[in-house]
Length: 188
Image 1 (cartoon, rainbow, N blue to C red):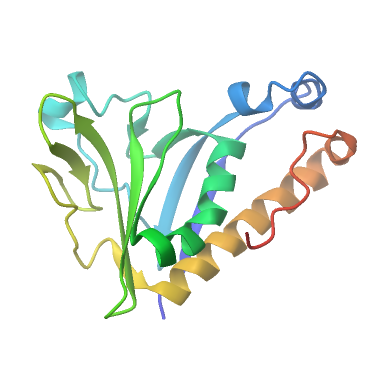
Image 2 (tube, helix red, strand yellow; image 1 turned 90 degrees about the horizontal axis):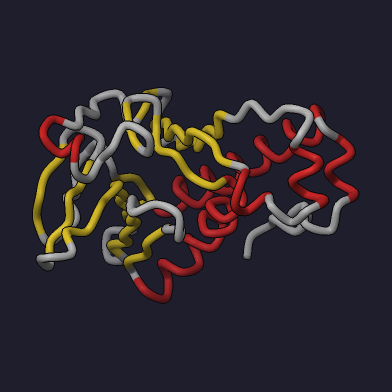
């Protein structure tokens, strides 16, 4: 069994409730997302090399993780297991960055693989980071560093979000009263 954890590194301060009051939380509330597989960071081997200046910029991805808007990512993450049953390949993306997280299901083997990527708009290829290295190719690399059983992936998505939301509510219980706070984060 593979243990998957999405870790949301946020340090919200007293303005967090204001973000919910003004419906700015989808735009202004970001985190550094780390992904742990069996206790090891998926991003620990990341090295931007020459990609650093053009695609994988330090602001959005580095050895600490990937920068994402928190709640749009959470909603996409929770939809991913269901979407994989329909599409087999699903991109978690937002309108604010060019970096995406691609998730691929091999139904025959019941294996989910994921990699962060940036599409080269001049070609039909992507820059992929698979947990070990950056490469440039059309298809997502599938390796021992980025693959696991479907059920382990689904369980990791749900548990990670539940843990994060509960930690936010412990720190800032008042955010639960705002209409924009995501209250229905169960399996979609």
